[in-house]
Length: 338
Image (cartoon, rainbow, N blue to C red; front, side):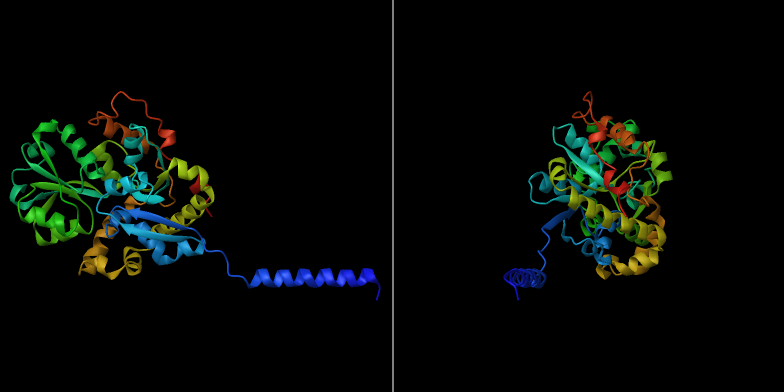
């Protein structure tokens, strides 16, 4: 054997050893992405938990932790503080925050309607036929500065009421909302499924304004109202486009699942405690509101303009200020999703 041949064999052996060592090492763990949801049990935010339950985050190689919040405004504050990387909340926060000099972007649009209903207490129903009849009343919202706050103020303003004509009370959702109605703390309030179905079944409340479908939303607000979305800080997005791409892939896959499966099939994938002891009622609410979800994660046409119009009607932070809607959302990631 020549010296050259020996050197080649040694080199090949070293290369083989290196490959063996590298392939035996465990794969580097993905960096954890924490997403806060403005109420994981609410059906309007169902795509977040459903994505996790279907295993789509893992399919993308993502390590995602979902944490719960009482209201979207609380989730928004956690995002701005840097405590989380993303939020599942209402798109309208992107516009509200831009008016305050803070930039966040929706990268996947979950819904094209709020999925919200203004419920009026049965004790008040006989004398309440429209928002104009709520003058002098206390109205429930999930939190001050929340999307239910925004929508309530707009509907009051549209009915001719001024800010001092009513009082807003943060009552959360679910059991706390139900308790506020039962204890006469609020005459009416805005909430979502499954709380809607629960209160209608017991007869403790009736529907005053329904915004669970695109058609009903257009009648109430004058156009499509993109609501539930996945948004992040623009500064984070600029540095984590690969993660954003994977998250968009996972969420869009879930929205396609929702579009092609029945309410019963979707409910089967959700945690049983979300049914609140009545699975049939949960399925009924989901069937009635399933049309709120987009089939592909894209922003509905003219949706941002409707949201801006709604907020500008009462929000002094927005009135008279230029808002660049192009910086409140992007379709780049859903357009490129598999």
